[in-house]
Amino acid sequence: MVVALRRLPNPRLTGLGGGIFAAGVMFLLGCVDWLLFDGGPLMYGLLFLPVAALTAVWVRPADLVTAPVSVPIAFAFGTLPIAGGTGGVGGRVLAVITTLALNAGWLYGGTLVAGVIATVRKVRMIRRRYR
Image (cartoon, rainbow, N blue to C red; front, top):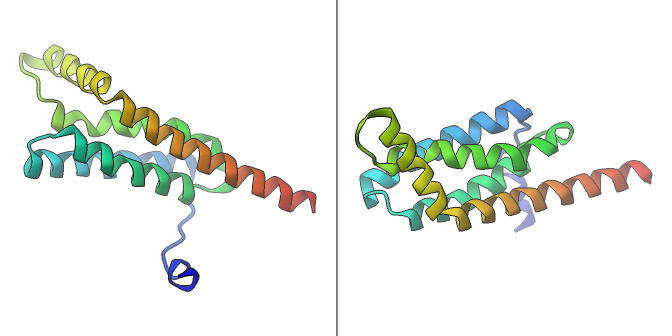
């Protein structure tokens, strides 16, 4: 299993690159969720957790602090296709805010996942330097 995991790509994204990666993937997943599942929050939330984990794993060690910050922004950006809303920009903004409020559990969960992974990576990096 370790050999199979080592064959996976191991990119090192900058802080900005990690944010753009997460936002782009979440927007794409939001579009797919809207097309296939009519914007159901369950699928979007379930798909957010692995994106948050991958963002925290793939960000450079120097930019670890950006992973838990960029992941919630990406979640909010990805809700644009599934939020709905009518009545122009104001209606769209209110729909996004409502979607964020109703999916706060997924938002907090993904942020926690990214934060824990970034913290563990930082602690391991500090221990390696200490040794």
